[in-house]
Length: 200
Image (tube, rainbow, N blue to C red; front, side, top):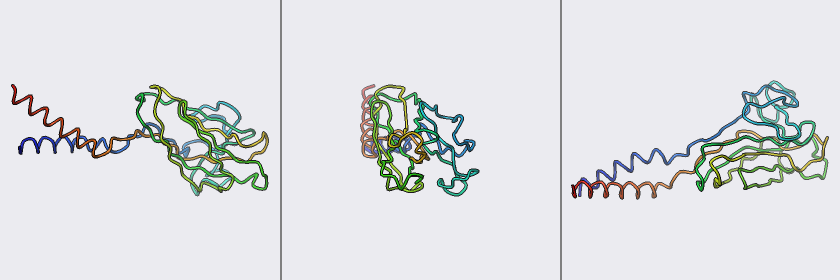
């Protein structure tokens, strides 16, 4: 019985390190060169419109002291995309990011909308009431393919508005198994191993 307990405990401890979320993708935009509008981005392609790299080194301080972020409306509302590969079909993933509003069009009644999605699942956030980078979001997605497209877009402004969403600290991470699930797997694995050894 002690052997069973020790084996189960060892397996549970070995698997517990997997309980922490595994980062699949991360971008703080701090390594980007400040540019209005951005000519290119390291980890993203601009699918439509244009975006600005703002913050440290520019006249726009909405990203916080010493940091950079994206203004999703450059000369026109922008959409950025990146391809995530090596995903597991049916597995859950967390998408987290910081967002806000640059307030260039705060006097307008036009909604400020940040649209985003991973694969076939998409969401929208009305950010009109935000300012600077004042909010964070976490969304859960299920991978439908081993490769999915992650996108963000400004879909709430008119061309030339110049006001729009701010985006920073984008992270995609794998959702870990609950600790209880890992412990159960460890116990069952230990029992199976001991049963095989006893049979032999």
